[in-house]
Image (cartoon, rainbow, N blue to C red):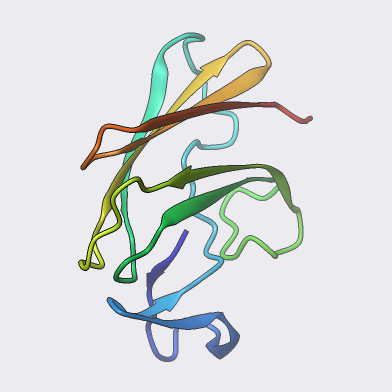
Length: 132
């Protein structure tokens, strides 16, 4: 997950210059709390993401889990990448805030992730298995 870069708070090695301003990359963005009880088959997460660059042709979402309750970065001790999902834009535009909606559903032993490009309603659905 990328967030606006904050001097003195974020590591300089995590700074990325974009058309939308400097971002901090590699932040562990918690979507689901560790040990959270969920109802299988119900959507547990809905989030909205925006592109950072003009004419961006897509987005990639790396999915991580952590043994820690509140990790800061995805490369912190205890963090493990369990999957990646990508969406390509059919109609890239000149604005750096192209919207993508992310939904996550937990069902049994798998995570079902859906990305939807808001402009065209193009959807990508992917699954990954829980580790543990």
